[in-house]
Image (cartoon, rainbow, N blue to C red):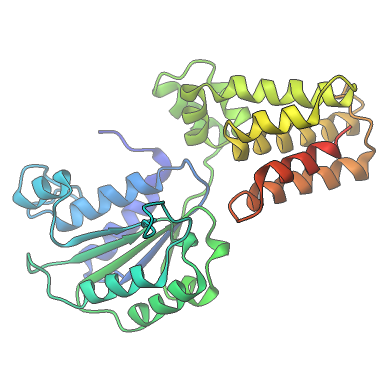
Length: 311
């Protein structure tokens, strides 16, 4: 199996530490969505637990590998969003989950080697959960590794981030991203990469999911509103019903292009009547709304307020 080229440096560094028997007890894998952090984690943990690893990669045939692939390895714990008592999935990771995890890691490894626990997304821990995790980070058990995954690590307390070895995935160079997209057979890779802001993983995912057509729909919606032909209420409902965070990403991207076009005396794609300061304010508001959709506020009101300001 081939692996993205931008993983190579992180992989080599971790394997060098493994060879020196100097692996940390806590890793924070962070960076933009779409760069393969979870694939990297799975590959690393699988190789770490393998009984016959080859240059850090798992053999795929030993008992440990078979159990890992089946999702039943006794020394692997994966923590994510749990369910509330009414069966509804939580939107955050809570303190009881962290306490259960800490108790589990305090027991001995069943295979006599590493115990590995992942928390994904670690930036979804609430304050009480993060505080509970601190003790485990400060007093790690022998041969226990915590692996935290976060697309937005700034949402995590600095006390957590500072106690983890950070592996930060960054956007690769344009040529590297384009070559990778072409290598996986993506059609019109250049347009997909531009839509994803240079993120090759998002470009591939959005192209396969048809999100590039959604990007065009968002631009048409904003142009219609700017010309007085659009209905902000109907538009907000439609956005809310179909990937609103992604639509807000595309909206902010389109407004950024509107500002660039004006700065270079080109025809602006949206023909907004907002001045430069107004465009910047709307761009900031769109990004704040995307963040706010994660919280308890009503999404329909957030979108209506935002779209109502566009002209």
